[in-house]
Image (tube, rainbow, N blue to C red):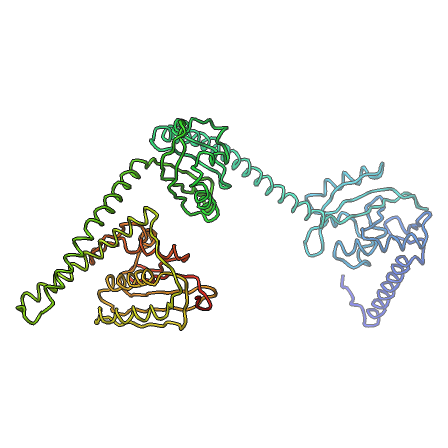
Length: 557
């Protein structure tokens, strides 16, 4: 049988008819959305059926249209009779194409069986179920379906409200992830806590052992020892302390140890003790401790701080070493030095006089004899300086270093000393900057002794670089005099001991002469002038020795 092709006019009529039906359908959908109709006709196999929302009005449909949830109405065959714009957006289709489709078209394969069970239950009772919808572009949307039946004029319909769970699901996912992370962190914390507890137990055991070792060690050394907190309170003494003082811990705990110090030594002891606590430097002093029988003995006290990893002081460990016997030996030695120095001074003076008489008429003496006399005079002067130094040390130790004081023009005195130094050491270059009218109260002879000692030391320890810089200037209410050399310099340890009695700087490449008393005597002289002496140096780069003296504005009568 041969099929006839439709004519152009027939196709045009058919197209117009379809366009009319489409426009009619769009108008119907628009009327439903805007609430202008209360009923609609759906064509199916049984013919045309009229669907009317029972008790629905325009306000209700406008509310459904504007809400955030999707809303659809299904008949018993699952065909969508009504849909709001939100549901159309959820499935990614135009609204006019959604109405009339079967709802399970939008259900993913994994949830179709679950959806069929839900719809079957929904016709009998209200129910809810989480279902996954599929969009047109194969994306998925998790939704909560809330199902209720509606009574319509032509029968019962099923109303479904769809709540988009995308944000909730993402929140749940993030919450689950955070919970997992929290669980991991909690597990790690518990593990770390267990390890920490084990470490604490181990460290506690080690600490107890170390503490016991320290106690045994401290109780078996000849020195008295103690520990004190950063605030200065003593919290431990060894057995030697109790044996020596005859006191108990409560009687000397905290700051009560001050009662054991000799009254004449307490002020200086507290001054250095507090300074050490504030600066963290080593505490060191010689003082006298009272024994249980009431007598006093000299002790060398020394305490060092123990710091943690952060550098903070945890506590101090101190010792007090009995030096009474050494003190007595030093007193006997000082007494011997004093007596010997006095005994030597008289024959030295006589010898010097005889040498001067011998050389009275040098022109009548043979050259060799003249040379011997000059060498003897040099050696005699050196010996006399050593004897004078020993006498000064003896006087210092006896507290008898006394001399008359008057107004001294330090400017004139320094310039005179510099001129002498230039004659004595012609190979050295002296650069000097001395301010005018530097007036002080003091003993010119003793201050000259100090200044020349600093110059002699600068020369002695600068065998290569022969430049010496001398400065004297006003600084507020003081005068500072300094001597700078560019010699071997001093280490930190040497700077800490340079003013000790009998201490000499020893260098492998430079052996110095002398008894190491010059700076010790200089320090005492400056101290008697109410001044301060000090040094600034770097090993291998020279040194600057200086002293500060109180300034007066004008000469006194």
